[in-house]
Image (cartoon, rainbow, N blue to C red; front, side):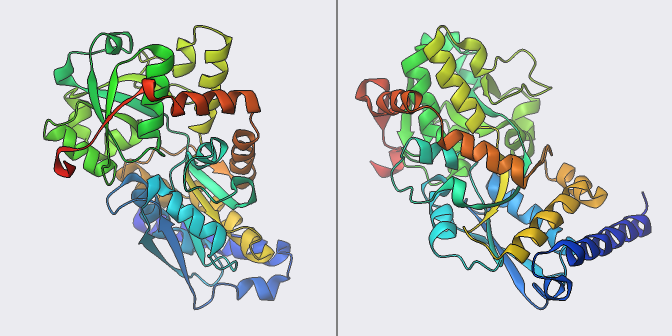
Length: 359
């Protein structure tokens, strides 16, 4: 498709979404058209600059405004902290409800809420979900020098992995695997971000990472993937990545009913990637316009092309689908949640150490 055709396609889509918004928005057509005129929308990225959620935020910032009435400018502001919890707390408690502040964040936020992770004050079911870009699985991976090629082999030797904190999945997944699958993962906590963990791996102070999207590995470290410097040992999600057919899903490793229930819960929690959400009780007109604009954006050829360039594996969810997944996670059976909390709290399931830079 030529540049003129792409521009014309985007223009026609923008006109169509504006017309549909005018017809359907609760507050009336003229008002809806003025919602974002001469305004700026801020997307909070719950990660440091250069992180994968920063990548999601900047991708959407380049396109979403084209599909909103008034064509507002969209800016990205990084708000890292506790694996993204800080950004979602801000959306829950402080963000304006006019649609001018949104966030994209770690997909495991509903999971963190369900297990009552430290610092969580948000309510996933109350957020105004706009949609999600992907359903990319999480990967537990080891560095090639370990000689470990399967999860079973990770039970035969200690493997040192990095974690951001005791909140995120870089910590939680290894804890669960140690307790339920018998792995011997020692965690170095206190890294500032996934980027810092990757640097630790490259410097030889770490031997793996307990959680990262496969799409992120491919986009941020294509040479590691190409040269098989990282070895995926388990996939956590609802479906296998097409280029990892021989790496098992976590749910395939369950040895009894309890493990199966825990693994299924964790896997559902990993299926909401690249989310976009706003504060509770958002202005109904803004909510409708943003949801419709998001849906038009993810179908647009220029957006799809840009996503490929930056390594985002698109498999979008609409607002209802994203909200349904979040609600399903936080309303999981109490028996399963309590069992996971006990595992995470048990001191014998993890050997936590500090990075050398903090000793």
